[in-house]
Structure formats: structure tokens, C-alpha cells
Length: 344
Ligand SMILES: Nc1nc2c(ncn2[C@@H]2O[C@H](COP(=O)(O)OP(=O)(O)O)[C@@H](O)[C@H]2O)c(=O)[nH]1
Ligand SMILES: [Mg+2]
Image 1 (cartoon, rainbow, N blue to C red):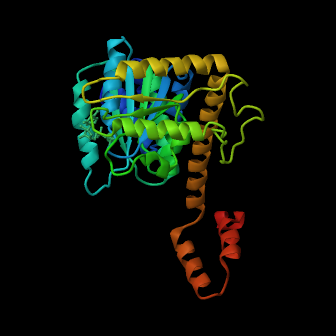
Image 2 (image 1 turned 45 degrees about the horizontal axis):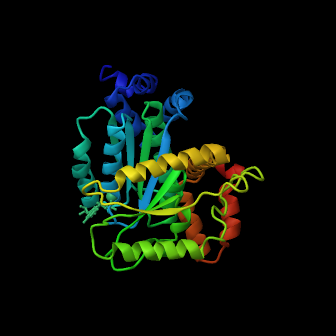
Image 3 (image 1 turned 120 degrees about the vertical axis):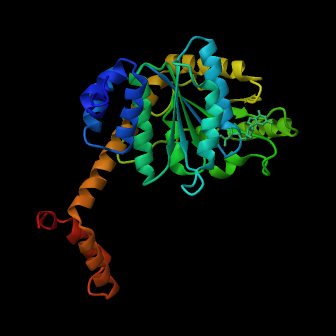
């Protein structure tokens, strides 16, 4: 593929389908930056998607997620499976430190055509991040990667939502980070299909495991997946697995730095996939993922339309008027959004 073709969305889609790594990287940039042609390219590739199994990995910073993702990827490679990795990194634009760290670690996998790794900075709106992540996953899927791992730092609702759009969600904990269990604070425990206590080589690992197991026992009767609160509703009766087919969340321990426990974790992820298929949950989550993706596309489009319909000078003028109590925010918002305003 020529350099010129890599700037042409239709040629890029073909390159991605043909397994051209440079085309894939370029396609990701096109999607991330919402450049013209990005949506047409993704549309062209959509028929190729839906093959990959998606694994979300989330948890507090420093629990060892990136190290674990690297170890998981190696285990998948040993099993002959290709792996795509999308790392959502909310590192501050001032340091970029974590991003660099991830790149260094992931270098262990470089030079292997069966692995493709993409780091994304979180910038702009959180909704935009969800859309971009979904598109990176779509591109990896269309390029034929069999397992796709999405690492997000479990610090905010958006990151949690992104991890939750995976088929299987791992929540990673580690001993010795000050608190017994960091995920409680962030409220991410309830999205876990599998809980992982990493850094099992560290003192206090068993205490962290016991704390998590206790919490699972206490929370056993509470409904999980309380539903989606976005603008798109799921069909009734599609929000929980078939009765008698509930998944049992277990706590597994790993030492990502030397790979201990990682094979067992892979086995558990495969078992979760088998459960997804037999319980009917695979279709439920598939629809949830589509609903989430559709919503992120619609929101991004609406944001653009609103921005286009509302020149900043108009907004500034309206803010002045509200500040001077010449009008109120409700009337002003209605006026800004009115079709006459969009035309004029
Ligand atoms: N002792 C020990 N350190 C680990 C383990 N896994 C990761 N680390 C270290 O923990 C630090 C944070 O790891 P990283 O993967 O960047 O965590 P992340 O922020 O959750 O992605 C690094 O210094 C890793 O080398 C482990 O199993 N044992
Ligand atoms: Mg990381």
C-alpha cells in the first residue's frame, strides 16, 4: 500500500482487512481524530467485526494492569492466538509518564505480528473517549485479532463503562497500595466477572483476597448489572442471565511480573466465555455493546451539530445577557437551540 493510499479511507479499510499494520495504525488515528472519511471506513469494515473476544481490564493505578495485560497477551500468543490491545490512559498531558511506561513494558511484545498495541490518551469529552475506544476495538476486530484486551484505569464512570462493554471484565486489585481494596471507592467491583489480586508476591496479598471474598459473600444477593442509564433502552427481559445460570465471581491471584497464575486466569476467562454462550448472556452483552456504541456515535454527532449551530460569539453574548439578568438560562438555551437560530 502506497503512502497516498494510507490517507484514503477506502484504501485504508482494504489495508486493515488485508492485515497491513501501517494501514491499521493510520485507520486508528483517522478514527480517533474524527477525520473525514472515518465513519465511511468503519462502515466498510463493520461486516468483518464481531469475531473477537473482548476482555476488559480495569482497576486503580499501580495495581499492575499493564503488566498483567502483557502477561495475558504472552499467554494467548503461546496458545497460538493473536492479540490486540487498547490501553486507555488518562495520564496527564503534562507528564505523559504512564504512557511511556506502558510503551516500554509492551515492548516485550514488539516484533510479533500476532500482537498489536495502541495507547490512547484521554482528552476531550469522556463520551468521545468511549467512542474512540469502541472504534479502536472495531478496527482490531476487523483486522482479525482473536482476543482484544482493553485496559482502562478504573478512576471514573466513563472508564468503568468502557471496561464494561467487554465480554469479560477483570477488576484488578493489589496489596500494599494503602487501602485494603481500592475498587470499593471507585465503585467498580460490581462490574467484575473475575476479580484478580495481582502482586501475589507482595505481603498482604492473602488479606486482600480475603477482604474481596468477604465482600463477594456480602454482596451475593444484590443484583448486578443494574442496567444502563443512557438514551437507548435495552429490550425488556434482556438484562440478566437465564435463571439458574448466574455466573460465580471468583478471586484469582497473579504475579504479573513473573507470570504466575496467568495461565489459570486465561482458563477462567475461557470458562467465562463458555458461560456467556450457554447462559444467553453473550447475546445480552452483544446488544448492550451495540447500544453503547450507537449511543456514543449519536452523542458525538449531536455534539457536533450543536456546536455548528451555536457560534461561540452567540454563546458569549447570551452569557453576558444572563449575567446581566436580561434573560434566564432556560429561555436562552431554548433560543440558542431553536431552528431559526441554526438557520441564521
Ligand atoms: N511485585 C510485583 N510488582 C508488580 C507486579 N505486577 C506489576 N508490578 C509493578 O507494579 C508497577 C505498576 O505496574 P503497571 O502494570 O504499570 O500498573 P497499572 O498502573 O495498573 O497499569 C510496576 O512497577 C510493575 O513492575 C507483580 O505481580 N508483583
Ligand atoms: Mg497501565
